[in-house]
Image (cartoon, rainbow, N blue to C red):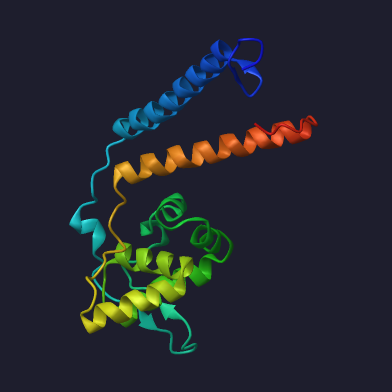
Length: 191
């Protein structure tokens, strides 16, 4: 209290409540925008016909480190790199963009080793492998021992998770932008 006026960070209380109201309206807006966007897009699982390939990849006879894709395989059947970013984060996304051949060969190798023709599941497994190999290997080992439920890495992320991730990312980006703005303009008070 200074001269009978209650203060909050040296602002009079009515001014502080104005900033609080403004921040609440901004956060509410950030919450409503993603929900409108997600309802605008139709999040439906892909049909089973898109999911399954008819054959498995084969090892390359000239180079045993590489795998030959099946005749029905096309790199356009892989889900988009942005899906990799949303599902597993920036590291698998960067590997997919920078080392696309390594990524594609890893997916084919997983399909061959696990005897699965589900391209989406193989891709999801390799995304999580590139994200955290030790956690992925532990999960697979515990699944084989029957100590942990088999996780479907190829399933689509839930829309609520996408919305929450977008809200969290926008809050972090806004805070980072605010700090950068204050530092660029020489203000010591970062908030």
